[in-house]
Figure 1 (tube, rainbow, N blue to C red):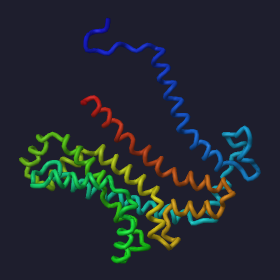
Figure 2: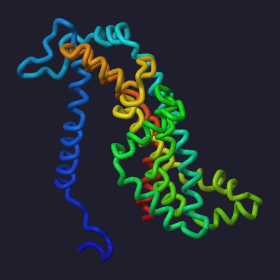
Figure 3: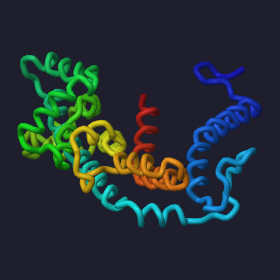
Figure 4: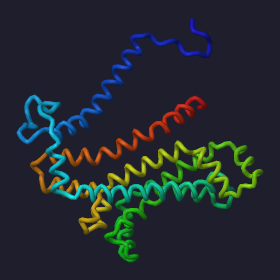
Length: 282
């Protein structure tokens, strides 16, 4: 009999079944990505619609990638998307953390109402504010500029709420120690809160980057200059121009996915240890 308060040991069969189920889910999740990469690597003479389908290319070739960069300004699209996404991430980390700190630590009249109003904006679809936002950008002269893509993403209600919850978990003793050392409220935010909330800041950065990088509707509305197109708009042009050349479309899709995968690979080591520690403490 297992000791009181401890979970009974799992059988080897249960562990094997769990691992098999997780492996099956992982394969199902990765299969579309593998198919996309395989299609982009197939040569011009290879049929991509064979039956049964061939997952691996018979003669791997980078010909589709060469034509992609030669026929379209993919480098410009990549640069525009990188600028917009990077500045949106930096703005969110700054403004959301500055807004979340007083909502988490300072006492002032109406704090609960302010938080409720901020959280309530999450329920408002973008389509509701799309036209007023467009008119605002036109009035201030930012239409057809990259700033029109950055400013609407500069702060998010989700980021404010996420960082507020993270700041609430920081021990008060750390703030008191910083206050004794002569830190101002802004110094406590910089020296105590931000380092303690590093995992949540990185999580927010990933969410904002992915959302901004993959945004299609707002750039389509606010941009007319092809030289300012972001990658989703560029890929849309690619698909309409070469609707029958699926190798080219697949190559463009792979190029758009790689930065997101690279970002996750680089940042996951900062997130996973913190998440494990929070689970242990919980």
